[in-house]
Amino acid sequence: MLRKLCLAALVVLVLPFASAQARVRIGIGIGVPLFAPYPYYRPYYRPYVYVAPPPVYLTPAPVYVQPVPAPVYLQPAPAPVYVQPVPTQPLPTQPVAPPPAVRPGY
Image (cartoon, rainbow, N blue to C red):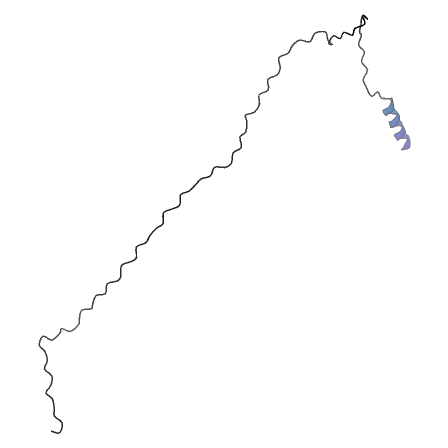
């Protein structure tokens, strides 16, 4: 196990951490540094057009106001009308005379 760990560490140390660049440059030393972009001329590319999504507007929920219903007034019920019942016997048409008074002792 220790051998494998040491071998893996050695392999990691041997691998280069940066890639090598093999460019050939020819320069003339005049004492002033002049730099030309690499490659010498870069053609102008039109910038990509980014179409943004439409904006999102957040608004509070609408408030609906409901009018208060008008109060309802109830008219009281009419008082009951009582009708006098019709008599079952007809009333006498002539007055009845009271019986004669009786004297006590006779």
